[in-house]
Length: 140
Image (cartoon, rainbow, N blue to C red):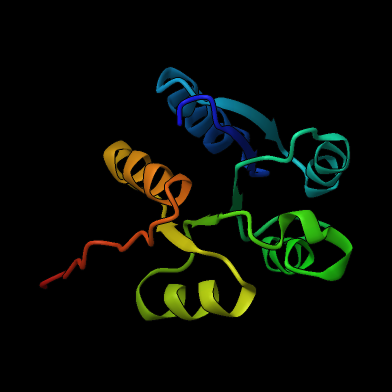
C-alpha cells in the first residue's frame, strides 16, 4: 500500500508542500502539481496510472470541479475508477458532501485538517473503503 502513487494538485504552494511532505514521510510516492494543466500532463504520461488523486477545488484555469469531472469522463477512462480526494478550505459539512458527490469524487477533507485524518482518508481510499468525516459541532 505504501508503494502507491499519489498525484497531488493544489495551487497553494504552502498547502501543496505541507501535504506532499507529510505523504512522503508516510512512505507514499507523491507527484505534486501546482497547476491542473501540469497534472493532466502527468496523468497522460503516467505508467502505471496513479493510485489516488488529491485535488483542491479553487484553482485558476481548470478548477477542481472540472478536473474531477474530466477524470470521470470518457477521455480519461483509465481514471474513471481512481479514488479522488478533494481538499478545500472553503467548503465543509453538507456542502462538501454534495459537492463531492456531484463531481464524482470519493471523499472530501476540509482544510485545515489533522494529519491523522489525511492519513486515514488516504489509507481508506487506497483500500477501496469509503472515508467518512468525523462530525464537528461549533458551539457559540
